[in-house]
Structure formats: structure tokens, C-alpha cells
Length: 372
Image (cartoon, one colour):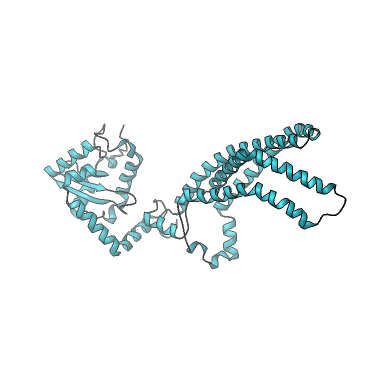
């Protein structure tokens, strides 16, 4: 348990933005490796004949030099192999570099963070270094590296073991046969490795997203503190006023139809709550109604498939104390969070027309899904 409480809440958009500015994003190196491997395989398959023909020429030239009786200078040997080596490796190297950049941009877009490369004292700290080495993240990376080494070792053993016979036979056939066998073995190793790396890459992609989100998790106290700090931000205040003016243009029933949830007591009061992650840092009281207006709000919510929650104390408190078009009071964060968690779990079944059951009464342990 940390000083600010247990970190059980999802990170707010502001927390994610701040982390991104520091260069902290969900990034899977396995995705980069896998995509680069596919690019390498594609280039080799597309240029296989050209590559092996150039290798044959290069080997023949080296053999011719070795057969000479006179000494050959180092510069002559380098000049002989340079052009051929560049012609073979340049397409593969260019493809790998391009795909490495593209695969990173696919994961987190264009990111330029000076803070990420600024020197920090904790990075040269011996104790901090040991903590990073033995952290959970580094242990996961170590485990992945060990698994890849074991897999590639076993793969090479079995593939090369099966290729010994063809290689021996190819020696007597000449360079063309050796190139053909080498081409076949290389393709097999690359294709099997690619399948394995796809599995690892997909798993690591989702793991890195999970680990990144977990590292940014916040306690309820941190969310409250962030909310209080944002209250003093003139940009936030201006945005809230703009949102409030847009909401004022509509009446209670229309707000109930667009709400994330409707709180009732159950017939005399109705309060519409609106929460859109990324747009509203906290749930907004978008509409209130009493008497016939509450009945109309309930009817609109039912027609739109908005979930209706029966909670008398919460409905009375929000109706009496919550500011219309303002954020919910701090003392109801927990109960509203429980309601919104239910909404998030069942969102795919909501907002599509009348729901098959009535009000949800969580105070009595009612957590039925919409199809219940």
C-alpha cells in the first residue's frame, strides 16, 4: 500500500499524456523484431536467386585468389569483396531499418521526447542500476531472451542435422548444388522462426500494453488530487464552461437519452450521469429531474437502452448537492465508480434499445448483466 493508497484506478488521460511526454509508452521490441524478420524473409525470397548467384561469384573469386601462388594484398581482397558484399546486404539492411522505424510508429505514433534522453543521476546510480537489472520488467526480458535462444538452438540443430546428407551430396555436385541446399535450409529456418516470432510478438504486444497501463495505475487519492489541480487550470475551466453551455441547450429527457447511466430513487428523482473517457476527466451530472420530469427522463433512458440504477441515497445526494453540468462530488466517487465499472463491462449490450430487465439495485447485490 503506497502513501496515496492502493493503485486500483485506470490512469487518466492527463497521466497518460504526461507519461508520453517523458517517453514512457507501451512498446514491444518483439513486434519490431518480428516485422523486421518478415521483411528480411520477403527480401530473401524475392531476391533469393540474385543473392545466391552473387554469392557463387564471390566464392569463385575468393577461390581463384586463394589458388594464386603470388601474394594478394589486403586492399585487393577488400576491393574484390566490397561491391559484391554491399550488393547482397544493402537491400536487406535498408528493409530492416525501414521496418524497425515503421513498426515503432505503428505502436505509439510519432514521438519526440527530449526528457527521455536527458542525463539523470539515478541512471548512473549503482543501487538504481541493480534495481533496474532485477526489476520485474528486466526479468521478463531475460526470460524471453532465454526462450528465444533455446528455440533457435533446437531449431538449428534439427534443421542442420537433416541437411547434413544433402550438403555432403552437394559437395561433389558443385557450387550450384551447394547454393541450392543452402537456400532451402535458410528458407526453412526463416519460415519456422517467423511463425514462432509472430506468436511471441503478439503475446508481448498485449503484455507490454498491460504492463504499461499497470505502471500508470493511480490511487483514488491521486485522481482526486489531479482533479483539484485541474480545477485551477483556466483551460480546463473554459472547456467545462463550453461543455456546460452545450448541455444547457437540451432538456433533461434528451440528456437521459444520451447519458452513460441514470440514477433514480426510483420514481420521484432522476439524475443523468455522462462519462466519456478521454473527454471528461470525471463523471458529469448532465441532467436532473423531479416529479413528471423524472418520469420523462426514465422513459427516454429506457427507450435508448441506458442502464437505470436504483439508489435512493445517491439519487437524493446528487439531486440536492451536485451542480448541474458539473462533476460529481468527491464523496460519491466510490459508488459511482462501481456503477461505471458495471457499464464498462456490459457496454456492448447497452444503448441499443430497451433492456430486457428493469432497474439495477446494487445496494441489494444486483449486478445482473443486461441479458440477465
